Amino acid sequence: MTKILRSFLLVFLIAFSINSSYANDDSANTAQMMGLAIKALADKDYSQALNLLKPLAANGVQAAQFKLANMYENGLGVDKSEDEAIKWYKEAAKHRTQGPKFTVELNFNAPVSDPTDAFKLWQQLAKQGDSIGQFNVGLCYFKGMVVKVNYKKAFDYWQKSAAQNNSNAIVNLGFMYQHGAYVKQDLKKAVEYYQRGIELNNPVAYNNLAFMHATGEGVKQDYQKALDYLEKGSSLGNADAKSNLGWLYQKGLGVKIDLEKAKDLYTDACNQGLPAAYYNLGYLYQSGTGVPQDLTKAMTYYQLAAALGFPAAETDLGFMYEQGVQVPKNYNTALKWYKKRGQAWSSLDMQVDSLETVSPY
Image 1 (cartoon, rainbow, N blue to C red):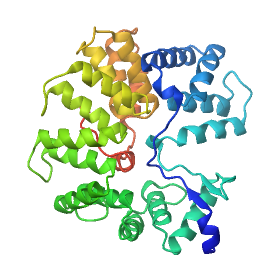
Image 2 (cartoon, rainbow, N blue to C red):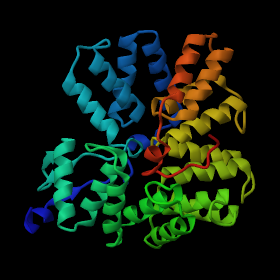
Image 3 (tube, rainbow, N blue to C red):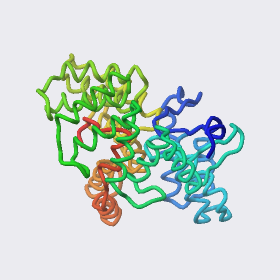
Image 4 (cartoon, rainbow, N blue to C red):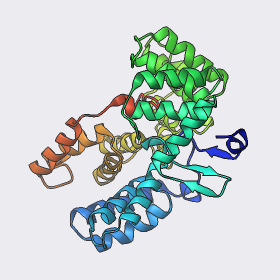
């Protein structure tokens, strides 16, 4: 690839925020509609489900996009359409929580959405020494997108990218040292990488280092520092930092308990599609913490979190069906959720692009 062509290549990274007018809508209304859609699907009322899911999906609700794609893939109430299924799966995949966005644009008007083609272009950029290409290739190897998971290659590509001060690569190297992914766990190095990320004003670095200070992992436990870092990450728009900051306000760690503030932060993070935030809101309503106890809302928020693959929500849904909490006892459904929670799930895969949450799961 020539340098001229490279100058026309724009790669969208996963570390982007979803901006839409819909993000300002009331998340409670969104959750209610999504809950009704999930119930309609369970009741095999596909016409009703379709009517509810289409506007939600069009307005950027990730869980709705996944459900709609599944309907088209399996012909549930609609004619099977591979094109429509792929369209909505791709829309859902644009969200940060689902990994890399496989979109490359040439000359700003010719989209290359095929993952394999995008990966090849990133590889070409990486060979030229481009830090963005190196970061994306590393991310694909880490998450097993297009290629098989290979932490060593991910580490090598991120090292090259980090040498050029790519803050996302720097943060992810810190993550690998924090968790001992390919490299030997080294919390001191993890802190050093996160601090480098903070120097570059990376919102994820603020969130990660806040987690370490909140838990005392590799550093002295300091809720005030965690609070300061999360406030900065939150101000930069990071959904995980917002949710984690809400948790500190909920628990009164480093700050006075403020349940209204916690609820507002969770809601804001929900509007950005963060499954942990849906789960946290569900917990507030299930326990009646700071809000009137509402088990129907709790169930709805847990279903939204589960639709986005959040494991703790799957456990709680299993418990609610097992015990008949707000739903008729149904051991088969409970077993389904427990099995889903027990399926192989890589915490590294979920966290590398979003970082940990200090939420209770």
